[in-house]
Amino acid sequence: MKQEYDKYTEEDQKVWKILFDRQMPNLPKAATQEFMKGIERVNFNGEAIPNFEETNKVLKSLTGWEIYAVPGIVEDDLFFDLMANRKFPATTWVRKMSELDYLEEPDMFHDVFAHIPLLTNQAFVDFLQAISKFGQEWIDDEWAIHLLSRIYWFTIEFGLIREQGEIKIYGAGILSSSGETKFSLSDEPEHFEFDVDKMLDTPYRKDMMQDKYFIIDSYEQLYSSIPEIKEKIELRLKEKAALA
Image 1: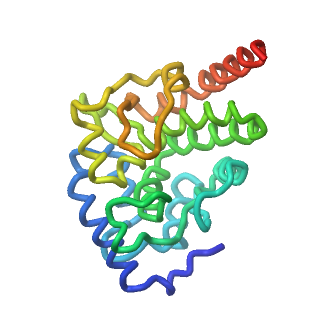
Image 2 (image 1 turned 90 degrees about the vertical axis):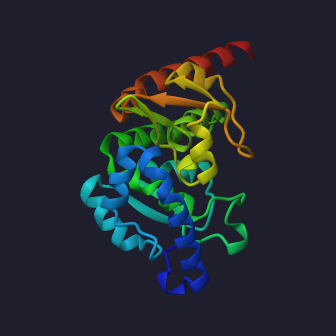
């Protein structure tokens, strides 16, 4: 499918502006520098919903990635196949005015505003592509995909990063939520150093703010963890098979 830009309504554009203008003031102090740079690189602003064609020109020139329009949440096999080929699946619909603060299924404010700016960082997208290739490899193993989803959840969606001695946000699930932006950096949740074993052993919930966050020191650290992630998941698969 394609983004049919002319079909966005006045309410759609207004919702985008409200969400953008509400969240952006929180981010200069809270978000990773690479997200703030990415916002500028892809020319996102509150005046208009991003045009995928224009954004893709920038992404392709920087990292070779592009936005791939999808109707909503896609099946795991398509999800991993797209990202293994440097295509980020994103919805084209915008939440209603009555859903400004919460909706069950991610809309394009989450998919586009929160995810796309970091697709301008090479180490980050290399990590994303690598774990997606694992997803392709393990697509028929439900337990492997569940373990991989924990890595994705605690990094791409809800990851924190240490920059110049301060904790910043890079996870899209936090960046698209003004409430979780403040909560994740507070003293209320637990904060852990990046630890593949601990992430693989930690379940998560989608219906509440997280109570555990993991901190990386750099995007290069994230990418360099790929061999360890593969090794640790394969070890757990062998252990599970031995008990069967």
